[in-house]
Length: 175
Length: 385
Image: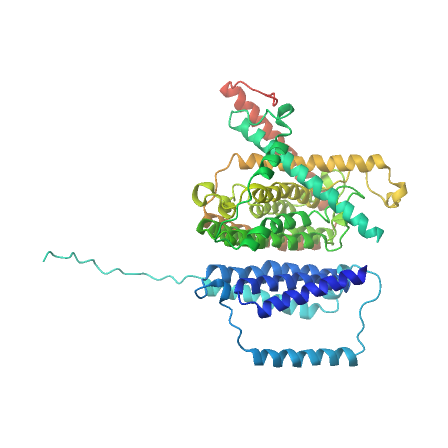
Protein backbone atom coordinates (compact mmCIF):
# COMPACT_ATOMS: atom_id res chain seq x y z
CA UNK A 1 0.00 0.00 0.00
CA UNK A 2 2.73 2.43 1.03
CA UNK A 3 4.80 1.48 -2.01
CA UNK A 4 1.79 1.99 -4.23
CA UNK A 5 1.24 5.52 -2.92
CA UNK A 6 4.95 6.24 -3.31
CA UNK A 7 4.88 5.05 -6.92
CA UNK A 8 1.83 7.20 -7.65
CA UNK A 9 3.51 10.32 -6.23
CA UNK A 10 6.74 9.58 -8.10
CA UNK A 11 4.79 9.09 -11.34
CA UNK A 12 3.02 12.43 -10.83
CA UNK A 13 6.38 14.13 -10.25
CA UNK A 14 7.84 12.69 -13.43
CA UNK A 15 4.70 13.53 -15.39
CA UNK A 16 4.76 17.13 -14.19
CA UNK A 17 8.43 17.46 -15.06
CA UNK A 18 7.84 16.01 -18.53
CA UNK A 19 4.97 18.41 -19.17
CA UNK A 20 7.21 21.29 -18.08
CA UNK A 21 9.97 20.20 -20.41
CA UNK A 22 8.01 19.28 -23.53
CA UNK A 23 4.82 21.34 -23.54
CA UNK A 24 4.49 23.88 -26.33
CA UNK A 25 2.23 26.12 -24.27
CA UNK A 26 3.94 28.15 -21.60
CA UNK A 27 0.90 28.07 -19.33
CA UNK A 28 0.79 24.28 -19.45
CA UNK A 29 4.51 24.18 -18.71
CA UNK A 30 3.98 26.36 -15.63
CA UNK A 31 1.15 24.12 -14.43
CA UNK A 32 3.29 21.03 -14.97
CA UNK A 33 5.91 22.68 -12.79
CA UNK A 34 3.26 23.32 -10.14
CA UNK A 35 2.27 19.66 -10.22
CA UNK A 36 5.87 18.50 -9.95
CA UNK A 37 6.61 20.84 -7.03
CA UNK A 38 3.54 19.70 -5.07
CA UNK A 39 4.39 16.06 -5.75
CA UNK A 40 7.95 16.61 -4.53
CA UNK A 41 6.45 17.78 -1.23
CA UNK A 42 4.73 14.37 -1.12
CA UNK A 43 8.08 12.66 -1.67
CA UNK A 44 9.55 14.63 1.25
CA UNK A 45 6.77 13.34 3.47
CA UNK A 46 7.73 9.80 2.45
CA UNK A 47 11.27 10.56 3.57
CA UNK A 48 9.86 11.60 6.98
CA UNK A 49 10.69 15.25 6.41
CA UNK A 50 7.37 16.91 7.19
CA UNK A 51 8.81 20.35 7.89
CA UNK A 52 10.67 20.40 4.58
CA UNK A 53 7.52 19.31 2.78
CA UNK A 54 5.45 22.14 4.25
CA UNK A 55 8.24 24.62 3.51
CA UNK A 56 8.30 23.34 -0.07
CA UNK A 57 4.58 24.12 -0.45
CA UNK A 58 4.88 27.50 1.24
CA UNK A 59 7.89 28.66 -0.76
CA UNK A 60 7.34 27.10 -4.16
CA UNK A 61 3.54 27.10 -4.45
CA UNK A 62 2.94 30.24 -2.41
CA UNK A 63 5.90 32.24 -3.66
CA UNK A 64 7.66 31.05 -6.77
CA UNK A 65 4.62 29.74 -8.64
CA UNK A 66 2.59 32.86 -7.88
CA UNK A 67 5.40 35.02 -9.25
CA UNK A 68 5.70 32.81 -12.32
CA UNK A 69 1.96 32.91 -12.97
CA UNK A 70 1.96 36.69 -12.49
CA UNK A 71 4.69 36.94 -15.09
CA UNK A 72 2.90 34.70 -17.57
CA UNK A 73 -0.61 36.06 -17.11
CA UNK A 74 0.25 39.75 -17.13
CA UNK A 75 2.39 39.58 -20.25
CA UNK A 76 1.12 38.44 -23.59
CA UNK A 77 4.10 36.46 -24.79
CA UNK A 78 3.93 36.07 -28.54
CA UNK A 79 0.85 35.76 -30.67
CA UNK A 80 -0.66 32.61 -29.23
CA UNK A 81 -0.11 31.67 -25.64
CA UNK A 82 -0.75 28.00 -26.40
CA UNK A 83 2.20 27.57 -28.75
CA UNK A 84 4.80 30.06 -27.71
CA UNK A 85 7.20 27.87 -25.80
CA UNK A 86 9.86 27.05 -28.37
CA UNK A 87 11.77 23.83 -27.88
CA UNK A 88 15.23 25.19 -28.01
CA UNK A 89 18.44 24.15 -26.43
CA UNK A 90 17.71 20.48 -26.92
CA UNK A 91 21.41 19.65 -27.07
CA UNK A 92 22.45 21.47 -23.85
CA UNK A 93 19.38 20.08 -22.11
CA UNK A 94 20.27 16.51 -23.06
CA UNK A 95 23.85 17.10 -21.99
CA UNK A 96 22.91 18.56 -18.60
CA UNK A 97 20.32 15.86 -17.89
CA UNK A 98 22.76 13.09 -18.77
CA UNK A 99 25.58 14.52 -16.67
CA UNK A 100 23.45 15.13 -13.62
CA UNK A 101 21.66 11.80 -13.96
CA UNK A 102 24.95 9.89 -14.10
CA UNK A 103 26.29 11.99 -11.21
CA UNK A 104 23.20 11.18 -9.14
CA UNK A 105 23.49 7.46 -9.82
CA UNK A 106 27.21 7.57 -8.97
CA UNK A 107 26.59 9.42 -5.70
CA UNK A 108 23.82 7.08 -4.59
CA UNK A 109 25.87 3.99 -5.43
CA UNK A 110 29.11 5.04 -3.78
CA UNK A 111 28.11 7.06 -0.73
CA UNK A 112 26.08 4.31 0.91
CA UNK A 113 22.98 6.50 1.18
CA UNK A 114 19.87 4.50 1.93
CA UNK A 115 16.22 5.41 1.94
CA UNK A 116 14.73 6.21 5.32
CA UNK A 117 13.25 2.95 6.54
CA UNK A 118 12.02 3.73 10.06
CA UNK A 119 8.59 4.83 11.17
CA UNK A 120 7.37 8.34 10.45
CA UNK A 121 8.67 10.80 13.01
CA UNK A 122 8.02 14.51 13.42
CA UNK A 123 11.12 16.59 12.79
CA UNK A 124 10.08 20.13 13.74
CA UNK A 125 11.50 19.94 17.25
CA UNK A 126 14.89 18.65 16.09
CA UNK A 127 15.11 21.29 13.37
CA UNK A 128 14.41 24.00 15.94
CA UNK A 129 17.02 22.66 18.33
CA UNK A 130 19.68 22.32 15.66
CA UNK A 131 19.01 25.72 14.11
CA UNK A 132 19.16 27.57 17.42
CA UNK A 133 22.06 25.65 18.99
CA UNK A 134 24.58 24.02 16.72
CA UNK A 135 23.92 25.93 13.51
CA UNK A 136 23.07 29.30 15.01
CA UNK A 137 25.76 31.17 13.05
CA UNK A 138 24.70 30.05 9.53
CA UNK A 139 21.07 30.56 10.50
CA UNK A 140 21.70 34.13 11.63
CA UNK A 141 23.85 34.83 8.57
CA UNK A 142 21.01 33.69 6.31
CA UNK A 143 18.54 35.89 8.15
CA UNK A 144 20.83 38.90 7.82
CA UNK A 145 21.14 38.15 4.11
CA UNK A 146 17.36 38.03 3.77
CA UNK A 147 16.94 41.33 5.63
CA UNK A 148 19.51 42.92 3.32
CA UNK A 149 17.58 41.57 0.32
CA UNK A 150 14.27 42.96 1.59
CA UNK A 151 15.75 46.38 2.35
CA UNK A 152 17.50 46.39 -1.01
CA UNK A 153 14.29 45.57 -2.84
CA UNK A 154 12.56 48.37 -0.97
CA UNK A 155 15.27 50.86 -1.88
CA UNK A 156 15.26 49.82 -5.53
CA UNK A 157 11.50 50.11 -5.80
CA UNK A 158 11.37 53.48 -4.08
CA UNK A 159 10.28 56.28 -6.32
CA UNK A 160 12.81 59.03 -6.75
CA UNK A 161 11.45 62.43 -5.96
CA UNK A 162 11.56 64.16 -9.31
CA UNK A 163 10.24 67.64 -9.72
CA UNK A 164 8.80 67.93 -13.19
CA UNK A 165 8.78 71.41 -14.52
CA UNK A 166 6.19 71.64 -17.18
CA UNK A 167 6.93 73.95 -20.00
CA UNK A 168 4.30 76.64 -20.31
CA UNK A 169 1.83 75.52 -22.89
CA UNK A 170 1.66 77.61 -25.98
CA UNK A 171 -1.69 78.37 -27.36
CA UNK A 172 -1.90 77.35 -30.96
CA UNK A 173 -2.71 80.30 -33.09
CA UNK A 174 -5.23 80.14 -35.86
CA UNK A 175 -3.82 79.80 -39.29
CA UNK B 1 -5.06 -0.76 4.98
CA UNK B 2 -7.73 -0.20 7.64
CA UNK B 3 -5.87 2.98 8.54
CA UNK B 4 -6.41 4.33 5.04
CA UNK B 5 -10.10 3.43 5.17
CA UNK B 6 -10.46 5.30 8.47
CA UNK B 7 -8.61 8.28 7.01
CA UNK B 8 -10.95 8.29 4.05
CA UNK B 9 -14.05 8.07 6.25
CA UNK B 10 -12.90 10.92 8.49
CA UNK B 11 -11.99 13.04 5.50
CA UNK B 12 -15.52 12.55 4.13
CA UNK B 13 -17.02 13.46 7.52
CA UNK B 14 -14.92 16.64 7.67
CA UNK B 15 -15.83 17.52 4.10
CA UNK B 16 -19.54 17.10 4.78
CA UNK B 17 -19.44 19.05 8.02
CA UNK B 18 -17.54 21.97 6.47
CA UNK B 19 -19.99 22.01 3.57
CA UNK B 20 -22.97 22.00 5.95
CA UNK B 21 -21.36 24.67 8.14
CA UNK B 22 -20.64 26.88 5.12
CA UNK B 23 -24.17 26.38 3.77
CA UNK B 24 -25.72 27.16 7.12
CA UNK B 25 -23.57 30.27 7.43
CA UNK B 26 -24.92 31.63 4.16
CA UNK B 27 -28.40 31.69 5.68
CA UNK B 28 -27.13 33.12 8.96
CA UNK B 29 -25.25 35.85 7.15
CA UNK B 30 -28.26 36.79 5.04
CA UNK B 31 -30.53 36.89 8.08
CA UNK B 32 -28.08 39.07 10.02
CA UNK B 33 -27.67 41.34 6.99
CA UNK B 34 -31.44 41.61 6.81
CA UNK B 35 -31.70 42.63 10.44
CA UNK B 36 -28.94 45.20 10.05
CA UNK B 37 -30.64 46.76 7.04
CA UNK B 38 -34.12 46.77 8.63
CA UNK B 39 -35.54 44.05 6.43
CA UNK B 40 -36.38 40.42 7.02
CA UNK B 41 -34.12 38.27 4.89
CA UNK B 42 -34.85 34.71 3.75
CA UNK B 43 -37.39 33.17 6.14
CA UNK B 44 -39.61 31.07 3.89
CA UNK B 45 -37.85 27.74 3.39
CA UNK B 46 -38.22 25.78 6.58
CA UNK B 47 -38.64 27.33 10.03
CA UNK B 48 -37.01 30.78 9.95
CA UNK B 49 -35.51 29.98 6.53
CA UNK B 50 -33.08 27.54 8.08
CA UNK B 51 -32.90 25.19 5.08
CA UNK B 52 -32.65 27.95 2.49
CA UNK B 53 -29.12 26.77 1.69
CA UNK B 54 -30.34 23.33 0.59
CA UNK B 55 -32.75 24.99 -1.81
CA UNK B 56 -29.93 27.18 -3.11
CA UNK B 57 -27.70 24.16 -3.63
CA UNK B 58 -30.39 22.25 -5.49
CA UNK B 59 -31.01 25.28 -7.70
CA UNK B 60 -27.30 25.64 -8.44
CA UNK B 61 -26.96 21.94 -9.27
CA UNK B 62 -29.74 22.19 -11.83
CA UNK B 63 -28.14 25.12 -13.60
CA UNK B 64 -26.25 24.74 -16.81
CA UNK B 65 -22.49 24.54 -16.43
CA UNK B 66 -21.46 27.33 -18.77
CA UNK B 67 -17.85 27.47 -19.95
CA UNK B 68 -17.02 30.44 -22.16
CA UNK B 69 -15.83 29.52 -25.66
CA UNK B 70 -12.51 31.30 -25.42
CA UNK B 71 -11.79 30.21 -21.86
CA UNK B 72 -9.00 27.78 -21.09
CA UNK B 73 -11.48 25.05 -20.24
CA UNK B 74 -9.25 22.79 -18.12
CA UNK B 75 -7.99 25.58 -15.87
CA UNK B 76 -11.47 27.09 -15.76
CA UNK B 77 -12.82 23.79 -14.49
CA UNK B 78 -10.25 23.02 -11.82
CA UNK B 79 -9.84 26.53 -10.36
CA UNK B 80 -12.84 26.37 -7.95
CA UNK B 81 -11.71 22.99 -6.67
CA UNK B 82 -8.22 24.32 -5.96
CA UNK B 83 -9.67 27.22 -3.99
CA UNK B 84 -11.92 24.92 -1.99
CA UNK B 85 -9.06 22.46 -1.45
CA UNK B 86 -6.86 25.22 -0.03
CA UNK B 87 -9.50 26.14 2.52
CA UNK B 88 -10.42 22.56 3.38
CA UNK B 89 -6.82 21.43 3.91
CA UNK B 90 -6.29 24.11 6.55
CA UNK B 91 -8.82 22.31 8.76
CA UNK B 92 -6.62 19.21 9.11
CA UNK B 93 -4.50 20.22 12.13
CA UNK B 94 -7.07 22.42 13.93
CA UNK B 95 -8.18 20.74 17.19
CA UNK B 96 -11.90 20.78 18.00
CA UNK B 97 -11.32 18.92 21.25
CA UNK B 98 -8.71 16.85 23.04
CA UNK B 99 -9.19 14.01 20.56
CA UNK B 100 -11.49 15.53 17.95
CA UNK B 101 -8.94 16.41 15.35
CA UNK B 102 -7.82 15.00 12.06
CA UNK B 103 -4.07 14.79 12.65
CA UNK B 104 -1.98 16.30 15.39
CA UNK B 105 0.59 17.71 12.98
CA UNK B 106 3.83 18.90 14.48
CA UNK B 107 4.10 21.57 11.80
CA UNK B 108 0.63 22.86 12.80
CA UNK B 109 0.26 26.55 12.15
CA UNK B 110 3.08 26.56 9.59
CA UNK B 111 1.09 24.00 7.59
CA UNK B 112 -2.00 26.24 7.72
CA UNK B 113 -0.02 29.20 6.36
CA UNK B 114 1.36 27.00 3.57
CA UNK B 115 -1.98 25.57 2.48
CA UNK B 116 -3.45 29.05 2.05
CA UNK B 117 -1.21 29.43 -1.02
CA UNK B 118 -3.39 26.98 -2.97
CA UNK B 119 -6.18 29.53 -2.67
CA UNK B 120 -3.99 32.18 -4.29
CA UNK B 121 -3.13 29.88 -7.19
CA UNK B 122 -6.78 28.87 -7.65
CA UNK B 123 -8.04 32.44 -7.68
CA UNK B 124 -5.40 33.50 -10.21
CA UNK B 125 -6.19 30.49 -12.40
CA UNK B 126 -9.91 31.21 -12.32
CA UNK B 127 -9.34 34.85 -13.15
CA UNK B 128 -6.97 34.18 -16.03
CA UNK B 129 -8.79 31.18 -17.51
CA UNK B 130 -12.07 33.11 -17.80
CA UNK B 131 -10.53 35.17 -20.60
CA UNK B 132 -12.17 38.28 -19.31
CA UNK B 133 -10.45 41.54 -18.40
CA UNK B 134 -12.47 42.04 -15.23
CA UNK B 135 -11.83 38.53 -14.06
CA UNK B 136 -8.11 38.84 -14.77
CA UNK B 137 -7.97 42.12 -12.84
CA UNK B 138 -9.91 40.60 -9.97
CA UNK B 139 -7.68 37.54 -9.85
CA UNK B 140 -4.52 39.65 -9.93
CA UNK B 141 -5.76 41.99 -7.22
CA UNK B 142 -6.76 39.04 -5.12
CA UNK B 143 -3.40 37.32 -5.47
CA UNK B 144 -1.53 40.54 -4.69
CA UNK B 145 -3.72 41.13 -1.65
CA UNK B 146 -3.39 37.60 -0.32
CA UNK B 147 0.39 37.37 -0.63
CA UNK B 148 0.75 40.84 0.91
CA UNK B 149 -1.39 40.06 3.91
CA UNK B 150 0.38 36.76 4.51
CA UNK B 151 3.30 38.81 5.86
CA UNK B 152 1.52 40.50 8.81
CA UNK B 153 -0.41 37.28 9.49
CA UNK B 154 2.83 35.34 9.73
CA UNK B 155 4.35 38.01 11.99
CA UNK B 156 1.34 37.77 14.32
CA UNK B 157 1.55 33.98 14.33
CA UNK B 158 5.25 34.33 15.19
CA UNK B 159 4.30 36.08 18.43
CA UNK B 160 2.14 33.13 19.46
CA UNK B 161 4.79 30.62 18.43
CA UNK B 162 7.39 32.41 20.54
CA UNK B 163 5.07 32.37 23.56
CA UNK B 164 4.11 28.72 23.16
CA UNK B 165 7.49 27.47 21.97
CA UNK B 166 5.84 25.15 19.46
CA UNK B 167 4.03 25.07 16.13
CA UNK B 168 1.72 22.28 17.23
CA UNK B 169 -1.87 23.44 17.74
CA UNK B 170 -2.61 21.01 20.54
CA UNK B 171 0.44 22.16 22.50
CA UNK B 172 -0.53 25.80 21.88
CA UNK B 173 -3.91 24.99 23.43
CA UNK B 174 -2.28 23.20 26.38
CA UNK B 175 0.07 26.08 27.06
CA UNK B 176 -2.91 28.40 27.46
CA UNK B 177 -5.26 27.82 30.33
CA UNK B 178 -9.03 27.69 30.52
CA UNK B 179 -9.63 31.03 32.21
CA UNK B 180 -9.37 34.33 30.32
CA UNK B 181 -6.36 35.28 32.42
CA UNK B 182 -4.37 32.48 30.81
CA UNK B 183 -5.39 33.23 27.23
CA UNK B 184 -2.62 34.53 25.03
CA UNK B 185 -4.60 37.57 23.96
CA UNK B 186 -4.56 38.93 27.53
CA UNK B 187 -1.05 37.80 28.45
CA UNK B 188 0.75 40.99 27.46
CA UNK B 189 0.26 44.01 25.20
CA UNK B 190 2.29 42.54 22.32
CA UNK B 191 0.07 39.48 22.10
CA UNK B 192 -2.96 41.77 22.07
CA UNK B 193 -1.47 43.72 19.15
CA UNK B 194 -0.70 40.42 17.42
CA UNK B 195 -4.31 39.31 17.85
CA UNK B 196 -5.60 42.47 16.19
CA UNK B 197 -3.13 42.17 13.32
CA UNK B 198 -3.91 38.51 12.78
CA UNK B 199 -7.64 39.12 12.76
CA UNK B 200 -7.41 41.96 10.22
CA UNK B 201 -4.94 40.04 8.04
CA UNK B 202 -7.14 36.95 8.14
CA UNK B 203 -10.10 39.07 6.99
CA UNK B 204 -7.99 40.34 4.10
CA UNK B 205 -6.78 36.87 3.16
CA UNK B 206 -10.33 35.60 3.20
CA UNK B 207 -11.43 38.42 0.85
CA UNK B 208 -13.97 39.67 3.36
CA UNK B 209 -15.28 43.21 3.66
CA UNK B 210 -13.65 45.72 4.14
CA UNK B 211 -11.03 43.94 2.03
CA UNK B 212 -13.29 42.46 -0.66
CA UNK B 213 -11.66 44.35 -3.52
CA UNK B 214 -11.23 41.17 -5.63
CA UNK B 215 -15.00 40.75 -5.64
CA UNK B 216 -15.89 44.40 -5.96
CA UNK B 217 -19.29 44.05 -7.59
CA UNK B 218 -19.61 47.65 -8.65
CA UNK B 219 -16.22 48.02 -10.34
CA UNK B 220 -15.15 44.53 -11.42
CA UNK B 221 -18.52 42.81 -11.94
CA UNK B 222 -17.62 40.42 -9.13
CA UNK B 223 -14.00 39.85 -10.15
CA UNK B 224 -12.52 36.42 -10.66
CA UNK B 225 -15.86 34.60 -10.51
CA UNK B 226 -17.70 36.66 -13.12
CA UNK B 227 -17.82 33.91 -15.74
CA UNK B 228 -18.69 31.09 -13.38
CA UNK B 229 -22.17 29.68 -13.04
CA UNK B 230 -23.99 26.93 -11.22
CA UNK B 231 -22.09 24.64 -8.90
CA UNK B 232 -18.63 25.93 -9.84
CA UNK B 233 -19.70 29.39 -8.72
CA UNK B 234 -20.99 27.94 -5.48
CA UNK B 235 -17.64 26.24 -4.85
CA UNK B 236 -15.98 29.66 -4.58
CA UNK B 237 -18.57 30.64 -2.03
CA UNK B 238 -18.32 27.37 -0.13
CA UNK B 239 -14.63 28.19 0.18
CA UNK B 240 -15.38 31.73 1.33
CA UNK B 241 -17.81 30.70 4.04
CA UNK B 242 -15.72 27.71 5.00
CA UNK B 243 -12.91 30.21 5.44
CA UNK B 244 -15.04 32.06 8.00
CA UNK B 245 -15.05 28.92 10.14
CA UNK B 246 -11.30 28.52 9.63
CA UNK B 247 -10.60 32.13 10.64
CA UNK B 248 -12.78 31.78 13.74
CA UNK B 249 -11.14 28.49 14.67
CA UNK B 250 -7.61 29.84 14.15
CA UNK B 251 -8.23 32.99 16.18
CA UNK B 252 -9.87 31.15 19.04
CA UNK B 253 -7.18 28.45 19.08
CA UNK B 254 -4.20 30.77 18.87
CA UNK B 255 -5.35 33.56 21.14
CA UNK B 256 -8.45 32.50 23.07
CA UNK B 257 -7.57 29.16 24.60
CA UNK B 258 -9.12 26.85 22.01
CA UNK B 259 -11.31 24.04 23.30
CA UNK B 260 -9.77 24.16 26.78
CA UNK B 261 -12.72 23.99 29.12
CA UNK B 262 -13.11 25.14 32.68
CA UNK B 263 -10.70 22.65 34.22
CA UNK B 264 -7.00 22.26 33.69
CA UNK B 265 -6.03 19.53 31.26
CA UNK B 266 -3.54 17.50 33.26
CA UNK B 267 -1.33 14.53 32.43
CA UNK B 268 -3.84 12.32 34.20
CA UNK B 269 -6.24 12.93 31.34
CA UNK B 270 -3.74 12.39 28.54
CA UNK B 271 -4.46 8.66 28.64
CA UNK B 272 -7.47 8.28 26.35
CA UNK B 273 -9.47 6.07 28.71
CA UNK B 274 -9.15 8.50 31.61
CA UNK B 275 -10.53 11.48 29.76
CA UNK B 276 -14.31 11.61 30.33
CA UNK B 277 -16.36 11.83 27.15
CA UNK B 278 -18.55 14.60 28.59
CA UNK B 279 -15.51 16.86 28.89
CA UNK B 280 -14.74 16.19 25.25
CA UNK B 281 -18.30 17.14 24.26
CA UNK B 282 -18.32 20.23 26.49
CA UNK B 283 -14.94 21.31 25.15
CA UNK B 284 -16.20 20.90 21.60
CA UNK B 285 -19.29 23.01 22.35
CA UNK B 286 -17.17 25.67 24.09
CA UNK B 287 -14.91 25.82 21.04
CA UNK B 288 -17.92 26.10 18.70
CA UNK B 289 -19.25 28.94 20.87
CA UNK B 290 -15.99 30.87 20.53
CA UNK B 291 -15.85 30.21 16.79
CA UNK B 292 -19.42 31.39 16.30
CA UNK B 293 -18.72 34.61 18.19
CA UNK B 294 -15.85 35.39 15.82
CA UNK B 295 -17.90 34.42 12.79
CA UNK B 296 -20.62 36.78 13.99
CA UNK B 297 -18.09 39.59 14.43
CA UNK B 298 -16.82 39.04 10.88
CA UNK B 299 -20.35 39.15 9.46
CA UNK B 300 -21.08 42.24 11.57
CA UNK B 301 -18.00 43.97 10.13
CA UNK B 302 -19.08 43.03 6.63
CA UNK B 303 -22.42 44.77 6.88
CA UNK B 304 -21.05 47.80 8.72
CA UNK B 305 -17.91 48.98 6.97
CA UNK B 306 -17.46 50.25 3.41
CA UNK B 307 -14.91 48.81 0.99
CA UNK B 308 -11.32 50.07 0.84
CA UNK B 309 -9.59 51.27 -2.30
CA UNK B 310 -6.72 49.20 -3.67
CA UNK B 311 -4.01 51.73 -2.77
CA UNK B 312 -5.45 52.20 0.72
CA UNK B 313 -5.42 48.44 1.10
CA UNK B 314 -1.75 48.15 0.22
CA UNK B 315 -0.92 51.17 2.40
CA UNK B 316 -2.60 49.58 5.39
CA UNK B 317 -0.70 46.36 4.83
CA UNK B 318 2.81 47.61 4.15
CA UNK B 319 2.93 50.97 5.92
CA UNK B 320 1.00 50.11 9.07
CA UNK B 321 0.46 46.42 9.72
CA UNK B 322 3.93 45.12 8.79
CA UNK B 323 5.79 47.69 10.96
CA UNK B 324 3.37 47.14 13.84
CA UNK B 325 3.80 43.39 13.42
CA UNK B 326 7.60 43.74 13.48
CA UNK B 327 7.29 45.89 16.60
CA UNK B 328 5.13 43.24 18.28
CA UNK B 329 7.44 40.40 17.30
CA UNK B 330 10.53 42.18 18.66
CA UNK B 331 8.62 43.30 21.73
CA UNK B 332 7.49 39.80 22.56
CA UNK B 333 11.08 38.56 22.44
CA UNK B 334 12.14 41.24 24.93
CA UNK B 335 9.09 40.54 27.07
CA UNK B 336 9.80 36.81 27.17
CA UNK B 337 13.40 37.51 28.11
CA UNK B 338 12.85 40.08 30.85
CA UNK B 339 9.53 38.99 32.33
CA UNK B 340 9.57 35.30 33.25
CA UNK B 341 6.26 33.49 33.44
CA UNK B 342 4.43 33.55 36.79
CA UNK B 343 6.53 36.44 38.04
CA UNK B 344 4.82 39.38 39.73
CA UNK B 345 4.94 41.65 36.66
CA UNK B 346 3.53 38.88 34.48
CA UNK B 347 0.63 38.24 36.86
CA UNK B 348 -0.16 41.95 37.20
CA UNK B 349 -0.08 42.40 33.42
CA UNK B 350 -2.37 39.40 32.86
CA UNK B 351 -4.99 40.54 35.31
CA UNK B 352 -4.90 44.17 34.20
CA UNK B 353 -5.16 43.19 30.51
CA UNK B 354 -8.06 40.86 31.24
CA UNK B 355 -9.92 43.47 33.24
CA UNK B 356 -9.20 46.03 30.51
CA UNK B 357 -10.73 43.68 27.93
CA UNK B 358 -13.75 42.95 30.10
CA UNK B 359 -14.29 46.65 30.85
CA UNK B 360 -14.09 47.48 27.13
CA UNK B 361 -16.87 45.01 26.37
CA UNK B 362 -18.98 46.34 29.26
CA UNK B 363 -18.39 49.91 28.10
CA UNK B 364 -19.53 48.93 24.60
CA UNK B 365 -22.83 47.60 25.93
CA UNK B 366 -23.20 50.67 28.15
CA UNK B 367 -22.81 52.93 25.10
CA UNK B 368 -25.28 50.88 23.08
CA UNK B 369 -27.94 51.05 25.74
CA UNK B 370 -27.31 54.73 26.36
CA UNK B 371 -27.72 55.47 22.67
CA UNK B 372 -30.95 53.51 22.65
CA UNK B 373 -32.17 55.45 25.66
CA UNK B 374 -31.22 58.84 24.29
CA UNK B 375 -32.72 58.31 20.83
CA UNK B 376 -35.77 56.62 22.36
CA UNK B 377 -35.50 53.95 19.66
CA UNK B 378 -37.94 51.12 19.65
CA UNK B 379 -36.06 47.84 20.11
CA UNK B 380 -37.04 44.85 18.04
CA UNK B 381 -35.07 42.36 20.07
CA UNK B 382 -36.86 39.34 18.65
CA UNK B 383 -34.60 37.87 15.95
CA UNK B 384 -37.31 35.54 14.64
CA UNK B 385 -39.36 37.58 12.24
